[in-house]
Amino acid sequence: MDNRDLVIRFLLGGTAVMLSYVITVVSPWKLLAGIFASFPAVMITAVLMVGIKSGSKKASYIAKGSVYGMIGCLVCVITVLAILQAGGSFAASIIIGLIFWLGSSVGISFIKLNRKRVVASSARK
Image (tube, rainbow, N blue to C red; front, side, top):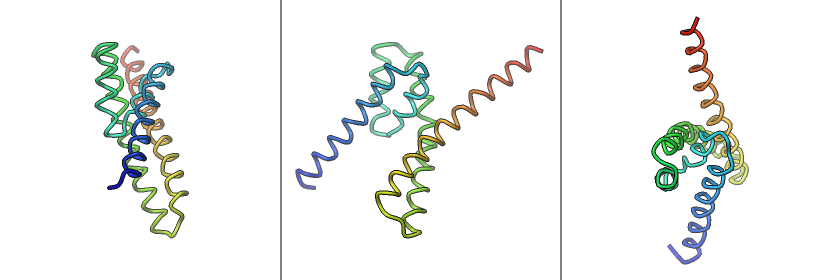
């Protein structure tokens, strides 16, 4: 590994951590911050930072969102692999994979949250 590789890894990792934190601060939907924190190297840092600053309850939202994001990571990997094996371009596979990651992560979390609401409203009747 040369210095260029280290700089690229530092910039990408630092950007991921920074974006995760910014989304945590500005997003009213804390699970979204967890989804963005699903990058494995970022997840522990995100949960730790939120836990120290805001407590365990808020940190648990980040951890829950990370589960949805990590399921999305699987979708991303499968998408990128399928596109590359079909002869698609490297750049296109990454972009489409990231779109599928975010879409599937948000979609799964909405399904999970709406399922809880339906079950809760059925229990009240």
